[in-house]
Image (cartoon, rainbow, N blue to C red; front, side, top):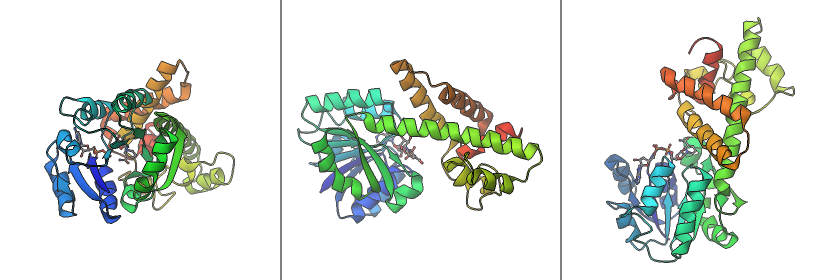
Length: 296
Ligand code: NAD
């Protein structure tokens, strides 16, 4: 299948490579020339704008962009995708953005005859490289079925979450809970150690008791508890605090539109904002424990 791919960053680059490995032909665009050059070396063709991708007779277009502003511009801008594709081209946006923007773009796409799915991912850059991402997909049943073989080349769990926008809803609800649980684990670990407990023993108790969760068991924020966790290598790699801040912002903003209180999500957002302001946004999000240990 001939696929257009826009946004060849930390996630999009390895995702596009997996499509090439699965035998698809790719026409790619990214404003960052080195990102395009790396994909061309792997076998893709380069385009010099979103419009050029749209005109390259692609059957499917996938986007993996930083924010909703980028997505709106790439799809709806004057030289964007929608103004330049023919009807029937399937559109898949895997960026993490707010559900309202997703639904707006999908509505415009459908009105001109282009089915569109939101398909944000979890699994990070490791999952993108290994082709083991989880895709949370929003859009009509028949369009989901059409996209399944393509998404399967990049991911392991492909979950249909319902109508347009619901992929983003699933993604931001999960990540809001992740942010909250990480703050909770950080606070509990910092308290226990401050009161005299050994961090590994405390983590062992939590992980065999009712406080156990992914943030305590797989990505424990206390250095030395888990040898392979970012906390034990200076909080490098992993999921950046600024990306968590972005997702908490999406959740609280979507909640405001829905008039739905998200008290703990808002607290977690403020803590990550403080942490980012202090210059630590590039550290893994488990580094938030340093706020509680007085080390930030
Ligand atoms: P990134 O910043 O590494 O990559 C984004 C790419 O988009 C860059 O190469 C940039 O040059 C390109 N871009 C910007 N404007 C463009 C345009 N007009 N047309 C084409 N390309 C354009 O970001 P990333 O880490 O790859 O994340 C992409 C999306 O995936 C974000 O929405 C992020 O929240 C989400 N996400 C990231 C992770 C992660 O661990 N990095 C995990 C899950 C989801």
